[in-house]
Length: 92
Image (cartoon, rainbow, N blue to C red):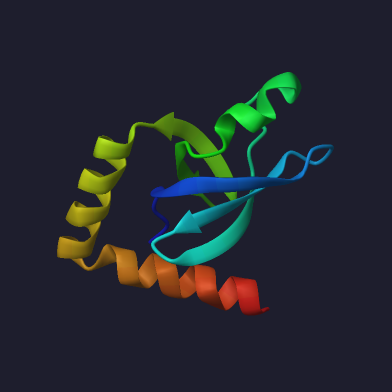
């Protein structure tokens, strides 16, 4: 199952391609942030929580909502499946 999972933006890695490094429950991943940021405001994303789905930040969420979502996903056992998929795709 593909889920949107919360992650925090750590840094902008490629401004032209709208790529950022995001931490998703300890897994660092490069994602596309074009859906949530204007070119002149990329740095404003650093430290923000975003909902990540198939390599794209789909929306910005507040930290409390992100933590609550992660807790629910962990209880459902869904986080581990998504994190394993993220780790495997990062290694490929």
